[in-house]
Length: 378
Image 1: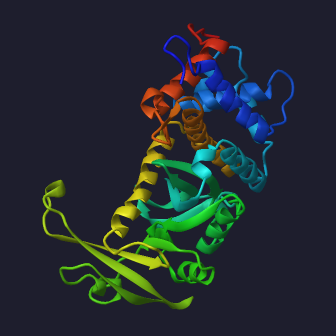
Image 2: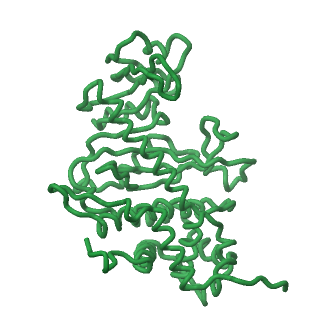
């Protein structure tokens, strides 16, 4: 690390890193005065403020209108091509220190509520799930993370279509991992994946996994596993009228609330597991690592562009940009604000928080373009 008198990272360097990553991986054909870098910097500025493209174009001076920006973004009409480019961008900024060894991989769903009746062009991209925020319809995005050194880095993201099966989603995401350089220790899945096809498929591929079981039934089903006062292991057969049945191990962990959140008594956690090398008493703490993904989602919401646009390709770009900014922040931490401590490399995230990075990006763009100080009636 540098001395106090010489900066290790500047706001201009931070912006350059983000723009370079976008330019290298996401080609946008432009014309006239609307240059690719300008479009990227408008997107970045909107993301740092959780703002819309419309308002950002008004705040900055000497930039294209929002209509012009959306026109050029609309040229990216192929969602599959955009997914491929954005996933390449996400993986291009992953520090080597995080990729060494075997990894715990987490796959999760990010559901953004959708209200109203979808048009025929929207319907294929509307995902149905359990009611949340007053709706059962969502824009759904599946994300794959690596959990290493208390960092959760996004390796891939996929826009989930209505016809996509859960097995297809996992297959797509795992296929993006380079098998020669990336080895899976086990998968940590959320309860959305607790179903016969997924469990059967993972067992067939011999992929170790752990996921919470969905508690069903009044007395039978998985609810019958919640009994007694001690943790234990057993097997369970999950049945489906459509997909048949699958038998797997379940680990039931019994804990005591001890006044946590003013609650007392026993609490049970039921996990579907396969071929994992953990003790019964450590699986609950191990799975809690995945809960950090929720904090990743909260971080993502700090830099997500605000929009009401219905175009699924542009919406996906805005979501993926938030995850990309977080990946670049982690990359900057490891390359500029880390040091070897007792033969292990440590990043000093308190010296450069995500909030500070977003401020670096905003102030550099404002300085480069200028901001509006007057309003005229025309």
